Image 1 (cartoon, protein in one colour):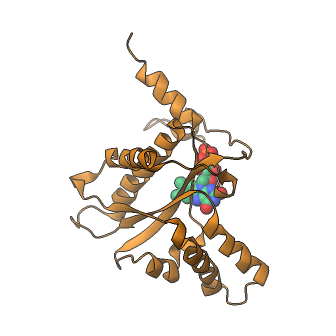
Image 2: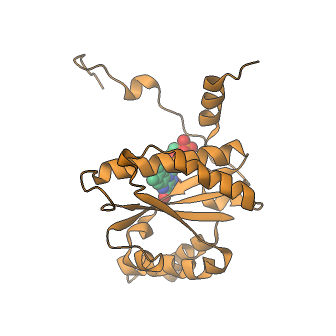
Length: 199
Ligand SMILES: Cc1cc2nc3c(=O)[nH]c(=O)nc-3n(C[C@H](O)[C@H](O)[C@H](O)COP(=O)(O)O)c2cc1C
């Protein structure tokens, strides 16, 4: 019996839903599963094979330091932030059993490949990771709060000047679900060149 790849792919893609980090708990993926999940990123299209992105995992013993970075990032953009908000920012460092930062390099390799192409490649890598996590039954999310653009986070992750943090990827067991977003239809995002677009 041949496998219906299209049906499988459609089912998997439809099953992927954002499960925000505060809804993710133990167990997270084990070491072998993580290897498989992260290996999925390698199948992302990558113009001229520059590998313009990388992932930096955050081990358990670095969560407290990351929490402090989130707090500092908030204070960096709002020195008058209320203690309650600083505490909330700190708490984000402890969410989700598995947490990894996706980073893109704007300059690595061939200068003809611009940032847009590099980000598309990074996005494809992230989607592959999310789909593999979904296939294994885990909940997952991309999150990019304002902290990803902060100098303190850039320093903490040891990023090069040409690198920027894109978003975090969180993976774990879905403890609860938010309201599912209605997906757009093909007509919402596809038009025909030359045809009147009434959107
Ligand atoms: C790069 C990126 C960053 C994101 N950051 C956040 C975020 O900080 N907070 C959040 O609630 N959702 C974030 N999202 C998830 C989107 O909100 C989510 O994909 C969208 O609502 C559609 O829901 P779905 O993924 O369940 O289809 C992010 C998505 C992307 C692609």
